[in-house]
Image 1 (cartoon, one colour):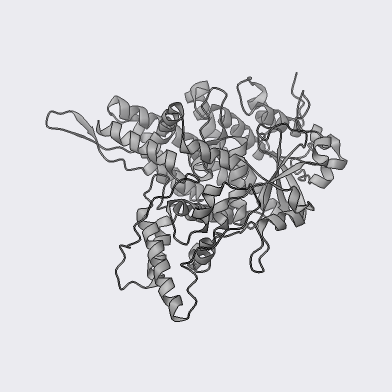
Image 2 (cartoon, rainbow, N blue to C red):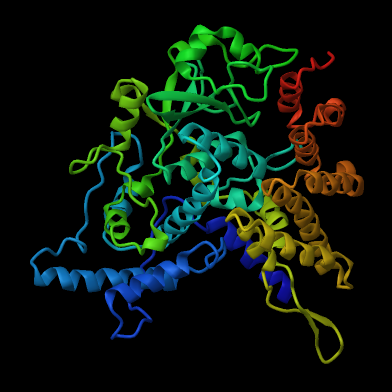
Length: 521
């Protein structure tokens, strides 16, 4: 029963962590910090607790939020001395009609910090680190964007046809390594926000609904809209016959319909040039960035934790808002821009998930709890102890760019598979071991140790074959490793065998085409 109770706690934490608009419960703003603590001390403590290495998707928000509100009260007292007490007053958020529901505005306007803010701050700190080490690899903004898109698509595997798609927020999707093409776009937009780069979704005007795969992801760099296909996990390029093909802009693609044809094999591409001549532009935005209390906090962040917390939608005190910024950069009328509905739909489903999806979340999140220590009672029966959650810490290390550390930690996780344990624990350990196996290969890829990644991926595919949860992305990544090693015949042979249930089959066909091979019909 102890393990069963723990399981439900894990499920509950996963489902509600960081959920979108909902009724905000009253928060005890009495801090645990000493009364003599300075305002800076309290803030430093709060931010420390909200760093991604300390604040997982199942962490309690009470203490860091209490500290943030204590800091706010201390700042308000300081401001009263100078007759500038603004930090403790609600500030109305400005947005076009219909962009958010009326019940969201009181939470965005309020001065106090709440549980949703904890996740927002954690996510911004998390994305800042990712944006930092990935952009260090690139020369120029466009190359940095391409590296981030590639990283996200590599680390977020597409759902298979027989899997249950879960409503996921970007942080959780990255942690689990699962998601849809929409999730990939949302995650990229959140990471690029930390580089102050805007993202949009372009959908044909003729589309009858705003869901489905009939869209492209656009990133605004230096007045141009660069296009990516998040289902394929590839940029739209000007020339498919070279690995160094340039990323196409929206303006260029309209004049070169043949470029879109290169994005598909043996069937018409789902988007035409006609669709892109007058597309509907959906702004990828996050209302948590609009709240003025995030401005107050961003101004005083410690230097080591500087990140983007505040980015208003509308112009604010000399600062151009995201709406006007995107309109100007893309050359679109402001009134033509729309809000991308996908995040709101995810929030809504998270508030009331089906029983089937709750159970599926259990299956995916339980491996993060390992190791789970086992003791025995007076009668010799096994009792599950408090999970050590080292798997979750290892995955966070990986995503934060600590690839060598994560690799060594994953090795210890993999060893759990051969240790004797009660059946329920053994099942969880096996799932964690498989995840650690595949993610170790990704770490090696990130460290550019492609030969080692080839060995790991080959061993993974031999061990798990089609039963493996990462079978399809592992095949695709193996081929990419061979390509990095300039072993294109091996890369191509890895992908020649395909199946209709492979979510990577179209992307792999395009890759083979770019490697100079026309796949057989």
